[in-house]
Image (cartoon, rainbow, N blue to C red; front, side, top):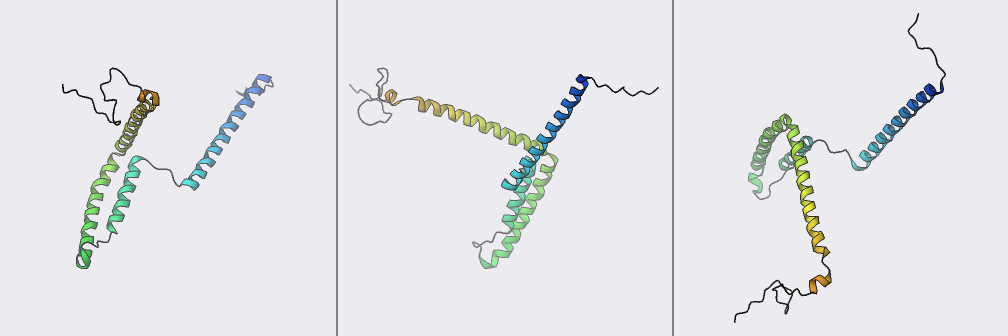
Length: 166
């Protein structure tokens, strides 16, 4: 006797197969839409940035190319080619020292980038909180005189205090 399931026409199994097909169709449609949106953004804005290590490599390469192609008007015509060769050598040495570190520890740069983002978010939060306190004061608060305030209410708007010399 065969181990096959007998064909069933129960409405419950039919509905379950329909839901599975609908879920697959929905997932497929979502994946296609996401791929199309990513392609559109890549065409509009260029490629997405890579990991922090890849971006650092690109930065090092770009800076090395710019420094190597730099003409030195300060050193004059005679020292120009020699100075340019020295710059190329220094750039190549720096590049040779940096690239192995990046290759061995790419996750370190991702962590550093994340830590920098967190520090920036903390700074923004602190600045926004301070700005809210500053802007929460109304003009009435600034012009009203507080009896406990020792500031001179007379001339100017400076932070000077009145001091009695008698």
